[in-house]
Image 1 (cartoon, helix red, strand yellow):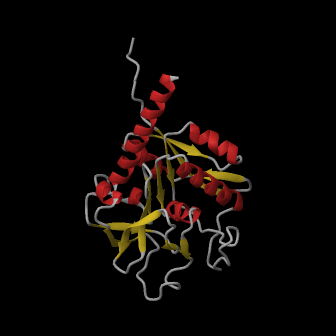
Image 2 (image 1 turned 45 degrees about the vertical axis):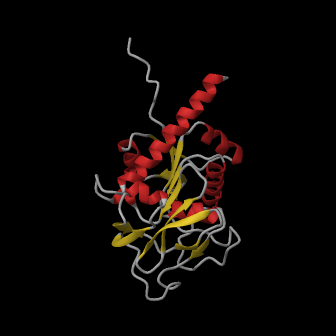
Image 3 (image 1 turned 30 degrees about the vertical axis):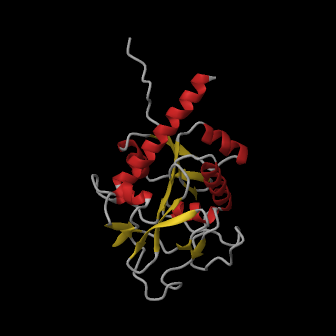
Length: 249
């Protein structure tokens, strides 16, 4: 009989896009799940259905969370409008569900990594401010859309610096919105050469990190892999603690 695995791979929930193909459909680029799998986690895609209670029950079964890239925020809906006319607005039910998901994950101390829209979601969920359209909101800034590559400088001493183990690295960028400031519980962990916020991390949290770029698009073996390894490692630690608590009951 095969020995039971006492340290199973942690379950990492991943949100996706809600698209309309005559009816609502969930869409997720497999590169996100592949990055989690290669880092040692088990990816599990989360459909944006149900209310806050359903989100809470779902997170109770997970060990970590990956918030992926997506469309733009409906700023009017979160009371930060008006929404810029160039915005491709996230469907209301998806945006509302994402905010519940992000806030609940942070509240319970679940390891969470936000990518692009996912980073902005983490920030906006806890008081961040937003540039709605680049370069209009930051005249003369470098291009950030269309998978352009540009360098980012990592803040020394940040959690992000420990994950990436570099002071500067090239990133793949696909956005025209960006955080212009963080909430009180978050710190800037990286900026581009013009000062634009490129990464954030939450103080006094086991693992809550957001990056504006797309690490899943970088080559395998790059420093970006450290983000996914860090998420999975933190999730595994959470799973181990939860298992010990259950065993003690």
